[in-house]
Structures are given as C-alpha cells and as structure tokens.
Length: 409
Image 1 (cartoon, rainbow, N blue to C red):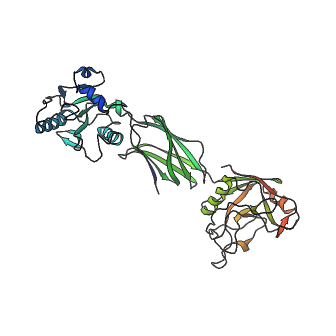
Image 2 (image 1 turned 45 degrees about the horizontal axis):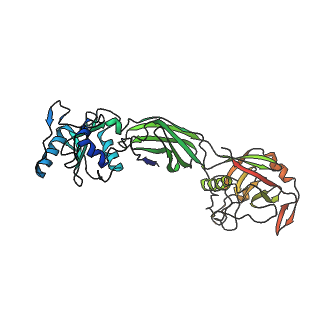
Image 3 (image 1 turned 30 degrees about the horizontal axis):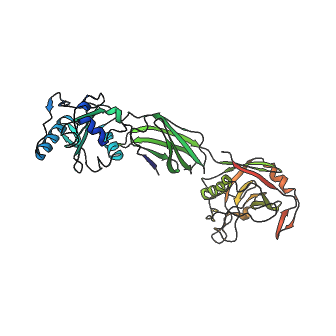
C-alpha cells in the first residue's frame, strides 16, 4: 500500500505583487504615468509574442472592445509555456489561485490558441500567464485594458531541486522524522509517498525553502522506500532505508536483558508493548509473579504490590502465529478472556508447549519476542524465593524492579 503526503506550498513571489495599490502604481491609474518607469514592472504598448510578431494593445473603448482587446492582446502576447523544465505556466496558475483567490479564483482551465496557453478569470476579468519567461496580467479597469509585465517568472516560481532524503533513525513502532533537503522546496507542489513498507500518518511538521521535515509512524521492518514526485507524476527522488527488528533493553536491579521483538509474526502485540515501553509505563514496576521452571511475570504492579493505572485498551490475541513458548521468549499475559491482554507480559523460564495455541477453545498465549542478550538474568530471577503478598501468590520476597525499559532499536 502506498501512503502519500501532498505538499502545497506557497510559491515564492513579490509579496505585494497582486495588491490593488501596486496595480494602480504600475498602470498609472489615478493620475500620471510615473509608475510606468518602475524597473520591476511596466505597462507595455506592444508585446513581442513567442513567434517574433508584434501585437499592439488596443486602446480603452466600449466594454465589448475592451474585452476583445484583452482577449486578442493576451492570447497573442501574454501566455506561453516557459522553456524551463522545472518551472511552467501551470506552476504560476497554481500559486496565484492558492495565494490570491480573490483575484484569481480557482476553476478556470488553461486555454490554448495558436500554441499559446493562458487562463481567464471571468468573475474578476483578470488574465494571467507567461510569455518568454515573463509574467503578464491584464484587466479592463486595473491595467487600463493593457498588458502589464510584472516580472520574470522565476521571481515568482523558483526551480525546485531535491538533493536528498535523510533520517536520524528508523525504528519500528516509533515516529521517524525525515528531512528532505534541496533548493526552492517551496516553489512547487509535490508529493512524498511510501512505496515500500509501512509508515503511517505522513505529516509535514516544518518547512523552509531548503528543508522539509516529515514525520510518520513506522509499522514495518525491512525496506522502507520513500518517493518524492511532482504533481505531474515526475519522480524527483526515491530513497530506501532499512528498518531493523525492534529491540528493547530491560534493566533490572538483578541485571539487564536485550529483547528482540518479532512484529512480522505478532504486530499488534509488539506495537502494544512498545507503546507502553516508549511512554515509560514499565519504569519502576516489578515482576510480581515468579514460578521457577515455568514463568516470571510483570508489567502491572508497583513495588508496594498495587496495580499500576493508565492501561490502554486490550488487544486481540495473536497466539496462532507460528511462535512457540520456548525458554527465553516473551509473551503477553492475559485473563481467561482471550482478547484481554494489556500491559502485563511474562518470560518463559523453560520450554512451555502447554502455553501454545492448541485450538479455538484453548488458544494459548501470544509470543512476540525473545531474549538475545543477558539470558543469564532469567536464571538469577529463578533463584529468588517467593511468598504471598497483597493477595497475590508467588510474589518474589525481594523486589525485582524494572528500573528502565527502553527501546534501543
């Protein structure tokens, strides 16, 4: 499945380009023509078309003549696809309609005439387009029915360059932040898609012309491929990362263990466990049940043998996934109800085939990982004596405390 995030940034441009006061200055409306001497914009009496022909802007006249003059002048002189492969007239239209919807309300489609492209906005009587990499506008009242050159296309729409997609780390079950680097990243609409693997909730969290930061929740291991594409479908950059199997270190007062989790077989159990881990829920809790040669269970009680609050919703049982309750594996504890596991888990201190899935009426318990470092700590646990406390049986007589439980990969 592909996950897509669309970027619809405000393209760079002259910040006051479309203000009414600037147009009055550009066209000399309201007295004088000093505004025509502006170096950045001027009213043109004649405008060269891409073919080399010269078309004269008709003078103001009746409404019909003005409309005819506008259409004739703009079609022949104002709009032509730019020769740049990175910046097009369509980019200008998109930017103008998004940034100045009052003047250029979205809806019109691009029109062509004798090789030229333009857009006319009938509700406001504005024409907008590009010719020879110059931006032009035309309006009966605001430009006196004349075509106005308001600057180079690249003053408004900068060529986009995407150089890399970077990430500090990709970890299953955690938010990863990807950094897209390049130039003029705010100059075009483009999409970022996950084309291989799973990373949910693609969200842009910060952006600038040279960097865009995107976060998502990684929910697969192995290859994770991201692709940045223009809205036209052209691929800008595609890059793959490798998501390792998640690992968690359980640090206790008797030693530490590293657990490798197995999301390919038990994704719900792993995600559930990691949510508790990454929220700090397990820090300071105890192993409250110890049966040497069988299991040691924890994740739900504090040292005073009171239940810890703040449990998430129970998860479905994932016991029939091909994983067995072998010595050194970790599995979800639950009540007699199959789909009741929350925070508590246990380590198998021996091979326990009786805890595996047998049938629908005897569904067993869901294994979701295994100890890969520090397995001797389980033997240390087994040497602790037990008794009854707080209404519970098989409670270690000395506290076995999980000081910290943290995801390290």
